[in-house]
Image 1 (cartoon, rainbow, N blue to C red):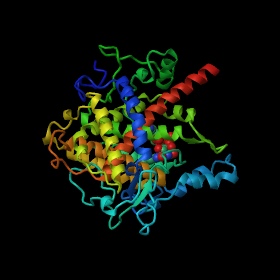
Image 2: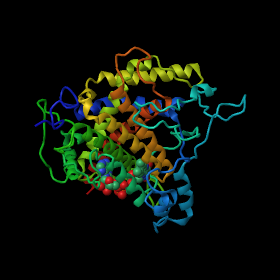
Image 3: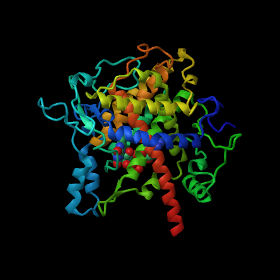
Length: 451
Ligand code: FAD
């Protein structure tokens, strides 16, 4: 049987990219992504209306949607937390509040500052407010009348916030419900356990044992001709490819968020931040498909970045500083070039083949609903990163399904600044998740040796 998908060659001509192909690609992209997201003004700031939107699906009064009080209450309920630092740490959890760095008096140094940045021109930052019918996500500045605020993504890292309980669970539940293309059944994780071995380095016996722990029962090994294990698709027989892809995208996003909150976790008895192996095991043990879906999303996002290679040649990076613009552009072009050099890691042409079925429109509408659901997330920082990442996946889908790689300049849809920033930051998040996965494997091995 195919180890990549139910139908061989479903997404990638050579039978899907192997985990090792993606690991190798990530070794090259990860430092570059880190540099782009951490050191450039362009990719370090994101504009969104973080506080002005209300959840369009249910009322906060019903207690179904999480809110800050709920998140804080959950942590305050932890009796072990020493009072002395509780409020202080919770304050830190909220992170610096969004502000609008454009508001500066003439002559003042740019609030975006930094070694590279100088002045920042408003004209360059104004975003397209118009929603394009080809968008898979809602424009960040769509909110009525609101222009949104700038948020420093580097100062508000995605990490443990303590947001949990019914509020968070209901958002996830509603997100997965969007995957029911033809019916609204109760959310149920319908994926079958799949092999996990090669995620964790086949050659290493301890790693294989770790794989079995994660997977609980060794299960069958699926190997390809060249002996490499491939990315598995969901094995839900009666579901169409598009529906499976939709599920993988949201499950992979969920898994990546879980990975980050476990990687940058706050020990609630000491107040210290750091990786929490037990947190990781509790969320990934017995669910190999969650880590696999992170790989899947990596392939999807990297392919979208690769596809933009030509488009980005003529893209204007407005940061108000000529040298910074050139530097940013050269880094992003390098990113797209390396991503493109990894060959076929995702073949989007196999999706939405039959336009008559209307799947594409439904797919797009459902993805927009997922991005609307971010307004129901009752924790500012989770909402920020939820919005960035849904926008990032939405942009990837727009590029994959609406862009022509070989089209001349001006023939493709416009890519808003927020879309490009979200796409690159989302790839960075997923890239970081793969690094964290590897580190958790090492931690687990070390723990085994100690016992
Ligand atoms: P949850 O992660 O809430 O999962 C709910 C159920 O979904 C699980 O019981 C399981 O059945 C299923 N499930 C879990 N993972 C997957 C998967 N990958 N694929 C398919 N099904 C799955 N918390 C933070 O600390 N920091 C954040 O930055 C953060 N961002 C968030 C962003 C969003 C959009 C949302 C909705 C929540 C966010 N949270 C964040 C909360 C966090 O995701 C969890 O909801 C919370 O930690 C409680 O976890 P849980 O163990 O109850 O299961």
